[in-house]
Each structure stands twice: as C-alpha cells, then as structure tokens.
Length: 66
Image 1: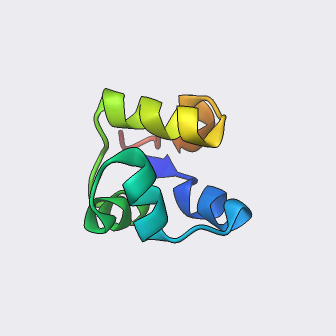
Image 2: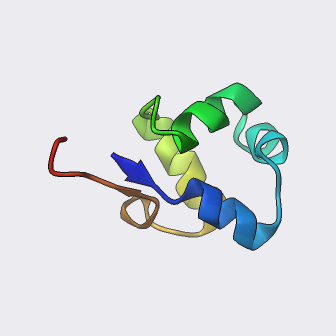
Image 3: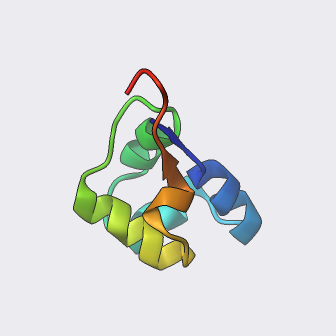
C-alpha cells in the first residue's frame, strides 16, 4: 500500500512530530507509515483523513501486490 502522507505534510508545512502529536501516535509511527513499513489501522487511517480533510482513498492506495 502506498500513501501520500509525506506530500500532505509538506503542503501543510508540518513535521512528523507535529503530525504525530495531532494524531496521537509517536513520530516513529508516522515515519514507519510514510516509509510503507507499517500499515495503519482503520481508526488511524480515519484520523489522518479527518486531519487532512481528504478521503482515506486519497491518502492511501492499494498496489497490485496488495
């Protein structure tokens, strides 16, 4: 699964740490998600969606290998 979190953070000019605080996770969790090393839970994906004002499908996309 791919994601656009890094792009969305850049648009808003916020750090991984700032996003982590807003979402309620660690900076390391944000880093792992952005690097596609960790797939977020449904609840976490919905929190990102609310924060960025985007649908989950706009933030996360499946790859053929998924």
